[in-house]
Amino acid sequence: MAEVTRPGGLGSTLVLALGTFAVGTDAFIVAGFLPSMARTLHVSTGAAGQSVTVFAVAYAVLAPVLATLTARLPRRMLLVGALVVLGVANLASALAPNLPLLIASRVLAAAGAAVYTPGAGAVSAALVRAEVRARALAVVVGGLTVATALGVPLGDLAGHWLGWRTALGLVAALSLVAAAGVFWIMPVLPGGPRVALRARLALLRRPAVASVLPLTVLGMAASYTVYAYSVPALRSVGVPEGSTVLMLFLYGAGAVAGNLVSGYATDRWGPIRVLNGGYLAMAVALAALGISAATGVTSPLIAGVLVLLWGASTWTQTPAQQHRLIAAAPQEAPLVVSLNASSIYIGIGTGTAAGGAALGAGSAVMYGLAAAVAVLALVFLRWTTRAGHGWRPVPAPSS
Image (cartoon, rainbow, N blue to C red; front, side, top):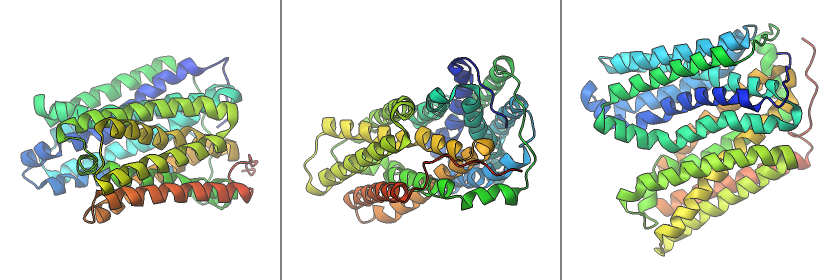
């Protein structure tokens, strides 16, 4: 995609953030009403939870494939179409009479999300000057982090007061509103050249790309080792079950703040310094929570501060990582951003599986495992940057 710049340009990215908020709400809200969904569909909660797993797996697999297939489409048409698909898929989910049709609609929703999120990130980078690129990425990712803060609590409230079908219907409406906003506000941007998937995936052989994506997986896995099991994990550090929603709001507030600060800091000091600080903060927060769980010395106030830091450090990495990828392959921005989005969901899935395996050994072990993965991410970052990989812009090959 040819780079198109605008004076400043950050204002146009706000409508893109509304779209990522719709995507993030769709991804996270289901967890808040799984029990009521299961009762309606006459299946177990675990079976209903497959809809969440299927969404994540489909997103991870489809993001790079769809980025290739849609490369030549004009960007505004692509983003509007992706949000319309997301809206229709959520409407189908809301009306699904049984689990198989619900699962099918979640795959369709993942397809829309897999096209929109990386596409919005690439477009936001193309709309602004290079010196504010990370801030533009942070604005777009900000929609996702706000959804992280609100998705599960809103899902719980909506499931209780409105029913899960109405909640998904509202997500569908939000997606269509975002589509209208993108259509009316975004400038017309051309698509990119047609390049075979095999040639595009050759990007993975570039050290500057190959060293970035595993780091995204490690960073998200560290956080989501614990996040998916927040209720027992937070109870072990003195947080009453009734205060769990407040703690999740704190996590989300930290996520929003960390994402926005990362955008400004990356533009000013570069992504490596930001990532070093983020992974160190994540390791410290998770280790401190683990020590509290192991010793029984607990304080809800201190736990709240640590949860805030945990959320901030988790989402500090995304603008910095996207910035590194776009600098490494500027002519393949939609693809590399889609690969990073896939890595985020692979990390979430991996961390959730690891946390589930460790949960039986106690929350202290789970926190310790998460902190160890955060340290591993920090070591991997230091090793790759010392080796000279993952930070220097690399010219894209001629197509």
